[in-house]
Amino acid sequence: MLILILSAIAKILSFFVRIIMGRTLSSEAMSYYSLAQNTMIFIITLAQMGIPMALSKVIAQNPKYFRHLKAGITMTLFNNIILTFSFILLIPLLAKMIYGNSMIIPVLWAIVPLIPLVSFSGLLKGYFLGKQRQVASNACQISEEVVRIIFVLLIFTWKKDLDPISMATIAMLSMAAGEMGTIIHLGILLPSKKQIRKLFPHSDDKPQKDHFDAILALSLPMTASRFIGSFFLFLEPMIITRFAAPFLKSALLRSYTTINAYIMPLLSLPSFATLALGNWLLSSFSYYYSRKRKKTAIRMLKGCLLFSLTIGCLCCITLSLFSKEICDLFYHKITMAPQLEKMAFPFILLSIQPILSNILHALNKSKAAMIDSLIGSLIRCMIFLLGSEIFLLDTSWIAITSGMIITTCLHGFNVIKAFLNHK
Image (cartoon, rainbow, N blue to C red; front, side, top):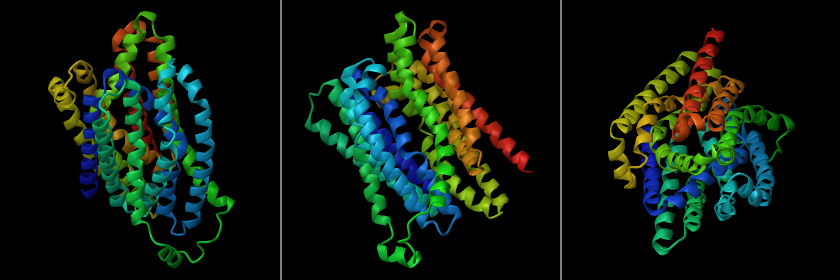
């Protein structure tokens, strides 16, 4: 309950940031920001490479984890150096190829400081999750959002007459500021050198090949499904601008950015519970399941699924019934209300997707999770690619909703199959 309360507070603060940006940023600025977010999500996936969640599982299962932790830090550092320099070189090309607009380059540059920050904060969260200190890993989200709120309010109060690109760039930089808040929060809670030497007398020993292999054996399958989803998300603006029906391109791109900027934050409100429970479940389920306490592990899974589904139903039904009132209250705009009303009810399923996905990883079924994500993402992209002349302006919400439903249903099927086969 404490984890859920902390996650709820963090989600409220996160949504408060969205309200500030929704009311402050112009429609054009919000469009640039939401388009660049696709690239940001893809880059974050590459930067973390699934290592934080792999570490949480290794630390939960293995009391002698220190050299695994060192291996994870080494791989993250090496990966970040390569990724950061590669991304800097590719920014002009990405702006031209993906977005067809060189004006978005400053917004993409604002992603660069986020790469090392989000990687380091991810390692810290993975460590605390593995140590069963879920309260710390969730409480840091409050620090993250508080720093973002202060950053956004200060900048937008100080600089009032900004062009759309500058507004979108500041909104993107607020993500890096938030990650700094997380790092400071968790850094204070880390054990001292003296405590580390007491717990691990051989802490100076270098990690061996098997320590790197143990992390990669978990991180690569874990990140594969996230990579697939974020990669197709990264390509979607290009698919719309280059392959949509010519008479629909601008309107369809506007509809797509409206969904990402305004509607998805509302539909993802239940994630304050589902993501927190999903992350907690990965380490806790692995802990009990590996120690042959399977009844306890399965009871945890059932409780998390039921609670997440209840939260999802309450939230999405409310959004469906009061879509205009909610949009007017939060954004002072109601143009997106019809799309919100159509998407709200099916998005109840999204509330259980993180739980199912993390259980597949805990059961060593990461390959199945990856295939599910691939199928859902392919169907989503195929609707964008071929469905614009059939669905017209409804293409965006139909594609996004269809991909989510298919991925969640396949996850559910594979979880049931894994338990049946195990029995």
